[in-house]
Image 1 (cartoon, rainbow, N blue to C red):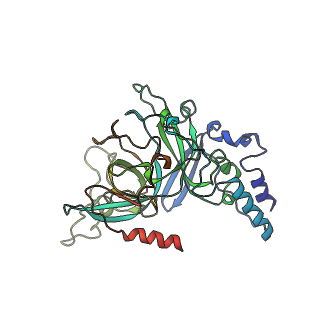
Image 2 (tube, rainbow, N blue to C red):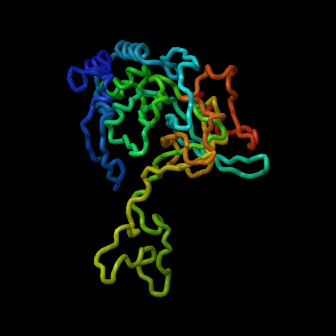
Image 3 (cartoon, rainbow, N blue to C red):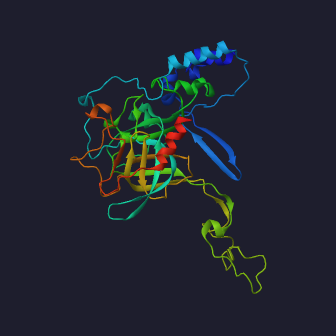
Length: 378
Protein backbone atom coordinates (compact mmCIF):
# COMPACT_ATOMS: atom_id res chain seq x y z
CA UNK A 1 0.00 0.00 0.00
CA UNK A 2 2.84 2.38 0.78
CA UNK A 3 4.41 1.96 -2.66
CA UNK A 4 1.26 3.03 -4.55
CA UNK A 5 0.30 5.80 -2.13
CA UNK A 6 3.80 7.24 -2.20
CA UNK A 7 3.78 7.17 -6.00
CA UNK A 8 0.68 9.37 -6.03
CA UNK A 9 1.74 11.74 -3.30
CA UNK A 10 5.08 12.28 -5.02
CA UNK A 11 3.59 12.03 -8.50
CA UNK A 12 6.27 13.01 -10.95
CA UNK A 13 8.88 13.49 -8.19
CA UNK A 14 11.56 11.28 -6.72
CA UNK A 15 14.20 11.53 -4.02
CA UNK A 16 16.85 10.62 -6.56
CA UNK A 17 18.57 13.66 -8.13
CA UNK A 18 18.20 11.97 -11.51
CA UNK A 19 14.39 12.39 -11.44
CA UNK A 20 14.10 15.29 -9.01
CA UNK A 21 12.52 17.72 -11.46
CA UNK A 22 9.91 15.87 -13.47
CA UNK A 23 9.00 18.89 -15.56
CA UNK A 24 12.51 18.88 -17.03
CA UNK A 25 12.82 15.16 -17.68
CA UNK A 26 12.48 15.42 -21.47
CA UNK A 27 15.18 18.04 -22.09
CA UNK A 28 17.53 16.97 -19.29
CA UNK A 29 18.10 13.27 -19.98
CA UNK A 30 20.96 13.15 -22.46
CA UNK A 31 22.24 9.60 -21.89
CA UNK A 32 21.42 7.11 -24.65
CA UNK A 33 19.94 3.77 -23.63
CA UNK A 34 20.15 0.57 -25.67
CA UNK A 35 18.07 -2.54 -25.04
CA UNK A 36 17.14 -5.66 -26.97
CA UNK A 37 13.82 -7.46 -26.82
CA UNK A 38 12.16 -10.43 -28.46
CA UNK A 39 8.49 -9.53 -28.37
CA UNK A 40 7.69 -11.79 -31.32
CA UNK A 41 9.27 -15.08 -32.35
CA UNK A 42 12.33 -14.55 -34.49
CA UNK A 43 12.09 -10.75 -34.53
CA UNK A 44 14.88 -9.06 -32.61
CA UNK A 45 14.44 -5.33 -32.12
CA UNK A 46 17.23 -3.06 -30.94
CA UNK A 47 15.75 0.05 -29.38
CA UNK A 48 17.88 3.13 -28.81
CA UNK A 49 16.45 5.74 -26.47
CA UNK A 50 17.63 9.31 -26.27
CA UNK A 51 16.71 12.34 -24.16
CA UNK A 52 12.93 11.79 -24.07
CA UNK A 53 12.84 8.23 -22.67
CA UNK A 54 11.93 7.30 -19.10
CA UNK A 55 10.81 3.97 -17.61
CA UNK A 56 7.14 3.56 -18.46
CA UNK A 57 5.63 0.54 -16.76
CA UNK A 58 6.21 -0.32 -13.13
CA UNK A 59 6.34 -3.70 -11.47
CA UNK A 60 2.85 -4.47 -10.21
CA UNK A 61 2.58 -5.88 -6.70
CA UNK A 62 -0.30 -7.08 -4.57
CA UNK A 63 -0.56 -4.32 -1.95
CA UNK A 64 -3.85 -5.70 -0.55
CA UNK A 65 -5.55 -2.31 -0.54
CA UNK A 66 -8.84 -1.87 1.22
CA UNK A 67 -11.83 -0.26 -0.44
CA UNK A 68 -11.26 3.01 1.43
CA UNK A 69 -7.69 3.19 0.12
CA UNK A 70 -8.80 2.52 -3.46
CA UNK A 71 -11.42 5.25 -3.20
CA UNK A 72 -8.78 7.65 -1.89
CA UNK A 73 -6.51 6.92 -4.85
CA UNK A 74 -9.35 7.57 -7.27
CA UNK A 75 -9.99 10.94 -5.60
CA UNK A 76 -6.32 11.85 -6.02
CA UNK A 77 -6.48 10.89 -9.70
CA UNK A 78 -9.63 12.94 -10.34
CA UNK A 79 -8.15 16.00 -8.60
CA UNK A 80 -4.71 15.86 -10.19
CA UNK A 81 -5.65 14.93 -13.77
CA UNK A 82 -8.27 16.26 -16.10
CA UNK A 83 -11.15 14.21 -17.37
CA UNK A 84 -11.18 13.06 -21.03
CA UNK A 85 -12.19 15.90 -23.33
CA UNK A 86 -11.23 18.69 -20.92
CA UNK A 87 -8.45 21.17 -21.55
CA UNK A 88 -6.49 23.23 -18.99
CA UNK A 89 -5.99 26.10 -21.44
CA UNK A 90 -7.81 29.38 -21.21
CA UNK A 91 -9.79 30.73 -24.12
CA UNK A 92 -7.49 32.22 -26.71
CA UNK A 93 -8.35 34.73 -29.37
CA UNK A 94 -7.23 34.43 -32.96
CA UNK A 95 -4.83 37.34 -32.47
CA UNK A 96 -2.77 35.26 -30.04
CA UNK A 97 -1.85 32.74 -32.74
CA UNK A 98 0.60 33.16 -35.61
CA UNK A 99 -0.55 33.24 -39.22
CA UNK A 100 0.06 30.31 -41.55
CA UNK A 101 2.78 30.63 -44.19
CA UNK A 102 3.84 28.22 -46.97
CA UNK A 103 6.98 27.41 -44.91
CA UNK A 104 4.96 26.45 -41.81
CA UNK A 105 4.91 22.81 -40.69
CA UNK A 106 2.12 21.73 -38.36
CA UNK A 107 2.08 18.80 -35.96
CA UNK A 108 0.25 15.57 -36.69
CA UNK A 109 -2.06 13.24 -34.79
CA UNK A 110 -2.11 9.62 -33.61
CA UNK A 111 -4.93 7.38 -34.80
CA UNK A 112 -6.01 3.76 -34.82
CA UNK A 113 -6.78 1.90 -38.01
CA UNK A 114 -10.38 0.64 -37.96
CA UNK A 115 -10.67 -1.01 -41.38
CA UNK A 116 -11.54 -0.34 -45.01
CA UNK A 117 -14.86 0.82 -46.40
CA UNK A 118 -16.18 1.32 -49.97
CA UNK A 119 -17.61 4.61 -51.25
CA UNK A 120 -19.03 5.91 -54.50
CA UNK A 121 -18.80 9.27 -56.19
CA UNK A 122 -21.72 11.00 -57.86
CA UNK A 123 -20.38 9.87 -61.24
CA UNK A 124 -20.57 6.22 -60.14
CA UNK A 125 -16.84 5.60 -59.56
CA UNK A 126 -16.13 3.24 -56.67
CA UNK A 127 -13.58 4.23 -54.02
CA UNK A 128 -11.95 2.20 -51.26
CA UNK A 129 -11.20 4.20 -48.13
CA UNK A 130 -9.50 3.40 -44.84
CA UNK A 131 -11.05 4.53 -41.56
CA UNK A 132 -8.64 6.08 -39.07
CA UNK A 133 -9.99 7.08 -35.65
CA UNK A 134 -8.19 9.80 -33.68
CA UNK A 135 -8.53 8.67 -30.07
CA UNK A 136 -8.08 11.16 -27.20
CA UNK A 137 -5.10 13.13 -28.56
CA UNK A 138 -3.45 15.84 -26.43
CA UNK A 139 -0.31 17.92 -26.77
CA UNK A 140 2.02 16.84 -23.97
CA UNK A 141 5.10 19.01 -24.39
CA UNK A 142 6.71 21.57 -26.68
CA UNK A 143 10.48 21.41 -27.15
CA UNK A 144 11.98 24.63 -28.55
CA UNK A 145 14.77 24.44 -31.18
CA UNK A 146 17.56 24.92 -28.65
CA UNK A 147 16.44 21.73 -26.82
CA UNK A 148 15.29 19.70 -29.83
CA UNK A 149 18.61 20.34 -31.63
CA UNK A 150 20.36 18.19 -28.98
CA UNK A 151 18.36 15.12 -30.02
CA UNK A 152 19.60 12.60 -32.58
CA UNK A 153 16.26 13.00 -34.38
CA UNK A 154 17.07 16.61 -35.27
CA UNK A 155 17.97 16.29 -38.95
CA UNK A 156 18.57 19.60 -40.64
CA UNK A 157 19.86 20.30 -44.13
CA UNK A 158 22.80 22.73 -44.39
CA UNK A 159 20.80 24.77 -46.91
CA UNK A 160 17.75 25.01 -44.64
CA UNK A 161 17.95 28.16 -42.49
CA UNK A 162 14.76 27.43 -40.51
CA UNK A 163 14.90 26.32 -36.89
CA UNK A 164 12.67 23.41 -35.95
CA UNK A 165 11.07 22.50 -32.66
CA UNK A 166 9.06 19.43 -31.72
CA UNK A 167 5.70 18.63 -30.19
CA UNK A 168 5.13 15.49 -28.13
CA UNK A 169 1.59 14.21 -28.74
CA UNK A 170 -0.07 11.48 -26.67
CA UNK A 171 -3.07 9.26 -27.42
CA UNK A 172 -5.46 7.16 -25.32
CA UNK A 173 -5.56 8.00 -21.64
CA UNK A 174 -4.84 5.22 -19.14
CA UNK A 175 -4.86 4.60 -15.40
CA UNK A 176 -1.86 6.32 -13.71
CA UNK A 177 -1.45 3.32 -11.38
CA UNK A 178 -0.09 1.29 -14.31
CA UNK A 179 2.93 3.55 -14.86
CA UNK A 180 5.93 4.74 -12.90
CA UNK A 181 6.06 8.07 -11.08
CA UNK A 182 8.68 9.36 -13.52
CA UNK A 183 6.47 8.58 -16.51
CA UNK A 184 3.43 10.18 -14.86
CA UNK A 185 5.53 13.27 -14.25
CA UNK A 186 5.81 13.85 -18.00
CA UNK A 187 2.13 14.84 -18.04
CA UNK A 188 2.26 17.31 -15.15
CA UNK A 189 2.67 20.32 -17.43
CA UNK A 190 -0.16 19.21 -19.74
CA UNK A 191 -2.47 18.32 -16.85
CA UNK A 192 -3.96 15.33 -18.69
CA UNK A 193 -4.04 11.63 -17.88
CA UNK A 194 -1.01 9.49 -18.79
CA UNK A 195 -1.10 8.28 -22.38
CA UNK A 196 -0.50 4.83 -23.79
CA UNK A 197 1.17 6.15 -26.94
CA UNK A 198 3.59 9.07 -27.37
CA UNK A 199 4.88 10.42 -30.68
CA UNK A 200 7.03 13.40 -31.53
CA UNK A 201 6.40 15.64 -34.54
CA UNK A 202 8.87 18.13 -36.00
CA UNK A 203 7.30 21.57 -36.43
CA UNK A 204 8.29 25.13 -37.16
CA UNK A 205 8.39 27.66 -34.34
CA UNK A 206 5.21 29.46 -35.46
CA UNK A 207 3.20 26.20 -35.24
CA UNK A 208 3.80 25.53 -31.56
CA UNK A 209 0.79 24.50 -29.45
CA UNK A 210 0.53 24.87 -25.70
CA UNK A 211 0.60 21.64 -23.66
CA UNK A 212 -2.83 20.30 -22.81
CA UNK A 213 -4.46 21.29 -26.11
CA UNK A 214 -6.74 18.52 -27.45
CA UNK A 215 -6.42 17.50 -31.10
CA UNK A 216 -9.46 16.39 -33.08
CA UNK A 217 -10.21 15.06 -36.54
CA UNK A 218 -10.98 18.65 -37.55
CA UNK A 219 -7.23 19.27 -37.38
CA UNK A 220 -7.55 18.32 -41.07
CA UNK A 221 -10.17 19.21 -43.66
CA UNK A 222 -12.02 17.33 -46.35
CA UNK A 223 -9.91 17.37 -49.51
CA UNK A 224 -6.55 17.66 -47.72
CA UNK A 225 -3.70 15.30 -48.55
CA UNK A 226 -1.91 13.57 -45.67
CA UNK A 227 0.95 11.14 -45.06
CA UNK A 228 0.26 8.04 -42.97
CA UNK A 229 3.02 6.07 -41.24
CA UNK A 230 2.43 2.69 -39.60
CA UNK A 231 3.89 -0.74 -38.89
CA UNK A 232 3.17 -3.47 -41.43
CA UNK A 233 1.62 -6.80 -40.52
CA UNK A 234 4.14 -9.24 -39.03
CA UNK A 235 4.29 -12.65 -40.74
CA UNK A 236 7.34 -14.16 -39.03
CA UNK A 237 9.91 -16.25 -40.92
CA UNK A 238 8.66 -16.92 -44.45
CA UNK A 239 9.99 -18.44 -47.65
CA UNK A 240 10.65 -16.69 -50.92
CA UNK A 241 7.31 -17.71 -52.46
CA UNK A 242 5.30 -15.78 -49.88
CA UNK A 243 7.91 -13.12 -49.11
CA UNK A 244 8.90 -12.16 -52.66
CA UNK A 245 6.20 -13.85 -54.80
CA UNK A 246 8.62 -16.32 -56.40
CA UNK A 247 7.13 -18.79 -58.84
CA UNK A 248 8.85 -21.85 -57.38
CA UNK A 249 10.15 -24.94 -59.12
CA UNK A 250 8.26 -27.39 -61.35
CA UNK A 251 5.61 -29.55 -59.74
CA UNK A 252 6.51 -32.78 -61.61
CA UNK A 253 9.06 -34.16 -64.09
CA UNK A 254 11.66 -35.14 -61.56
CA UNK A 255 11.32 -32.27 -59.06
CA UNK A 256 11.96 -33.58 -55.53
CA UNK A 257 11.59 -31.42 -52.42
CA UNK A 258 12.31 -28.22 -54.36
CA UNK A 259 8.83 -27.01 -55.24
CA UNK A 260 9.06 -23.80 -53.23
CA UNK A 261 12.84 -23.36 -53.11
CA UNK A 262 14.52 -20.18 -54.39
CA UNK A 263 16.88 -22.07 -56.70
CA UNK A 264 20.50 -21.16 -57.24
CA UNK A 265 21.76 -18.38 -54.94
CA UNK A 266 25.30 -18.01 -56.22
CA UNK A 267 28.06 -19.68 -58.18
CA UNK A 268 30.53 -18.65 -60.82
CA UNK A 269 33.90 -17.15 -60.06
CA UNK A 270 32.70 -14.88 -57.24
CA UNK A 271 32.44 -16.77 -53.96
CA UNK A 272 29.62 -16.31 -51.46
CA UNK A 273 26.14 -14.85 -51.80
CA UNK A 274 25.72 -11.37 -53.24
CA UNK A 275 24.52 -8.67 -50.90
CA UNK A 276 20.79 -8.00 -51.26
CA UNK A 277 19.94 -11.46 -52.58
CA UNK A 278 16.25 -12.32 -52.07
CA UNK A 279 16.18 -15.20 -49.62
CA UNK A 280 13.90 -16.56 -46.87
CA UNK A 281 13.70 -14.40 -43.76
CA UNK A 282 11.52 -12.30 -41.47
CA UNK A 283 8.55 -10.74 -43.23
CA UNK A 284 6.66 -7.65 -42.09
CA UNK A 285 6.83 -5.73 -38.83
CA UNK A 286 8.56 -2.75 -40.45
CA UNK A 287 7.78 0.97 -40.47
CA UNK A 288 6.28 2.13 -43.76
CA UNK A 289 5.08 5.51 -45.03
CA UNK A 290 2.21 6.11 -47.47
CA UNK A 291 2.38 9.56 -49.07
CA UNK A 292 -0.38 11.79 -50.43
CA UNK A 293 -3.65 10.17 -49.33
CA UNK A 294 -6.74 12.29 -49.88
CA UNK A 295 -9.29 12.77 -47.09
CA UNK A 296 -12.74 12.06 -48.55
CA UNK A 297 -14.85 12.32 -45.41
CA UNK A 298 -14.59 13.35 -41.74
CA UNK A 299 -16.87 12.20 -38.93
CA UNK A 300 -16.62 14.89 -36.25
CA UNK A 301 -18.65 12.98 -33.65
CA UNK A 302 -16.29 9.99 -33.43
CA UNK A 303 -13.17 11.73 -34.86
CA UNK A 304 -12.86 9.39 -37.85
CA UNK A 305 -10.95 10.20 -41.03
CA UNK A 306 -11.76 8.46 -44.33
CA UNK A 307 -8.52 8.45 -46.33
CA UNK A 308 -8.09 7.22 -49.88
CA UNK A 309 -7.03 3.64 -50.61
CA UNK A 310 -6.77 0.34 -48.70
CA UNK A 311 -2.97 0.39 -48.45
CA UNK A 312 -2.54 2.01 -45.02
CA UNK A 313 0.13 -0.17 -43.35
CA UNK A 314 -0.75 -2.34 -40.37
CA UNK A 315 -3.59 -4.51 -39.15
CA UNK A 316 -6.78 -3.22 -37.59
CA UNK A 317 -6.41 -1.54 -34.17
CA UNK A 318 -2.79 -0.62 -34.92
CA UNK A 319 -1.47 2.88 -34.22
CA UNK A 320 -0.65 5.15 -37.16
CA UNK A 321 0.62 8.72 -37.32
CA UNK A 322 -0.98 11.24 -39.67
CA UNK A 323 0.45 14.58 -40.76
CA UNK A 324 0.23 17.00 -43.68
CA UNK A 325 1.64 15.96 -47.04
CA UNK A 326 4.04 18.43 -48.64
CA UNK A 327 4.87 16.53 -51.82
CA UNK A 328 1.47 16.68 -53.51
CA UNK A 329 0.71 19.38 -56.04
CA UNK A 330 -2.52 20.31 -54.24
CA UNK A 331 -0.89 21.81 -51.19
CA UNK A 332 -2.29 24.41 -48.84
CA UNK A 333 -2.30 27.96 -50.15
CA UNK A 334 -2.45 31.38 -48.54
CA UNK A 335 -5.98 31.81 -49.90
CA UNK A 336 -7.09 28.53 -48.36
CA UNK A 337 -4.86 27.85 -45.31
CA UNK A 338 -5.41 24.92 -42.90
CA UNK A 339 -6.50 25.38 -39.26
CA UNK A 340 -3.36 26.84 -37.75
CA UNK A 341 -1.77 25.73 -35.53
CA UNK A 342 -4.78 23.46 -34.93
CA UNK A 343 -8.56 23.61 -34.95
CA UNK A 344 -10.26 25.47 -32.10
CA UNK A 345 -14.04 25.42 -31.45
CA UNK A 346 -13.90 29.22 -31.12
CA UNK A 347 -12.93 29.47 -34.80
CA UNK A 348 -16.47 28.63 -35.97
CA UNK A 349 -19.72 30.38 -35.12
CA UNK A 350 -21.87 27.25 -35.35
CA UNK A 351 -21.12 23.63 -34.40
CA UNK A 352 -19.69 21.58 -37.24
CA UNK A 353 -21.91 18.93 -38.85
CA UNK A 354 -21.47 15.36 -37.75
CA UNK A 355 -20.32 14.29 -41.21
CA UNK A 356 -18.40 16.37 -43.74
CA UNK A 357 -18.10 15.02 -47.28
CA UNK A 358 -16.15 15.82 -50.41
CA UNK A 359 -18.28 17.60 -52.99
CA UNK A 360 -17.95 14.65 -55.41
CA UNK A 361 -18.98 12.04 -52.83
CA UNK A 362 -22.42 10.59 -52.19
CA UNK A 363 -23.99 11.38 -48.80
CA UNK A 364 -25.06 8.10 -47.23
CA UNK A 365 -25.18 6.46 -43.80
CA UNK A 366 -22.21 4.39 -42.72
CA UNK A 367 -22.86 1.17 -40.75
CA UNK A 368 -19.30 1.21 -39.41
CA UNK A 369 -20.14 4.31 -37.36
CA UNK A 370 -23.11 2.47 -35.88
CA UNK A 371 -20.71 -0.23 -34.68
CA UNK A 372 -18.66 2.43 -32.86
CA UNK A 373 -21.80 3.78 -31.20
CA UNK A 374 -22.78 0.29 -30.04
CA UNK A 375 -19.33 -0.32 -28.55
CA UNK A 376 -19.46 3.00 -26.69
CA UNK A 377 -22.92 2.15 -25.34
CA UNK A 378 -21.56 -1.10 -23.91
